[in-house]
Length: 139
Image 1 (tube, rainbow, N blue to C red):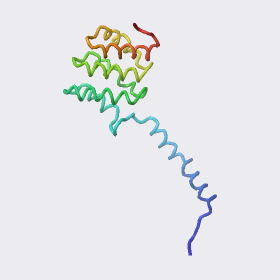
Image 2: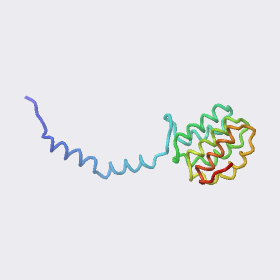
Image 3: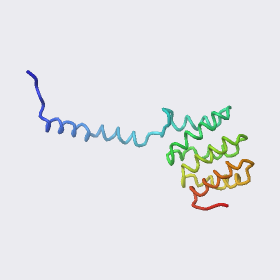
Image 4: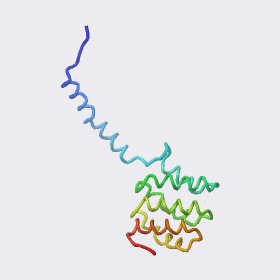
């Protein structure tokens, strides 16, 4: 003989569990959690922005770019990336700032310096980033 719980009772039990203060607290913690990419938190990617290898630095910038506006805490480190000796890192840093958007407003002036970069790709991305952050179209 099998025992079945009526579906209304199951639904009520599920509601009570999800509506509990403990469940609400867990949801708050999850909302305030540090953004991550590929199983690594933002802070780990920010550390990689100062890594020894250019590949490590530009990979970190791309990872942060994928976080969009949630990557805003990385703006100071990304601004430093705009001065990197490797164009791939400068490009990826500008791209990440573009993806962060208006929360990267402190990067507009450093991005303007890239408008004279020797890499046309870096210059183009700096223009796009300035537009995404400030709305200003730069020629």
